[in-house]
Image (cartoon, rainbow, N blue to C red; front, top):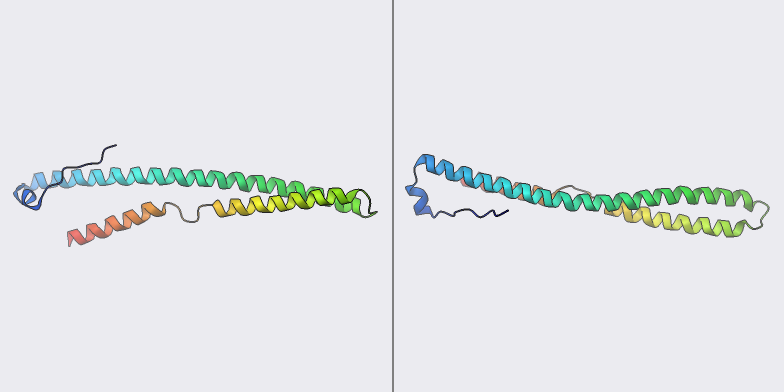
Length: 134
C-alpha cells in the first residue's frame, strides 16, 4: 500500500478555497488512518506470533510438569522399600526440571503490554494534532 500524499507548501495552502482545504485535510486524515491501521496490523501479527510461541511453551511445560509429578509420586511409592525406584525418581526429577524450564521460557514470552508501538504512535499523532489545531 502506497501512503504517499501530495505535500502542499504553505503558499499553496493559502491559495486554496475552504472546500479544497477540507478535501485536502480529509485526504491527509484518510492516509494517516490507513498508515495507523497498517502498522497496528503488523504489530498485532508479531504479538500473536509471540503469544502462540508462549502458549506452546506453557502448554508443553504444563503437560510435562503433570507427567513428571505423576512419575515422582509413583517413584515415591516405590521408594519406600528402596529398590529399583531410584531410576524412576531420577527420571521424574529430570522431567520436572525440564518442565520448569519450559514454563519459565513460556512465561517470559507472554506479551506484557499489547500494541506498544501503535499506542505510542497514536499518542504522538494526538499530540501533534493538538499542537497544530491550537
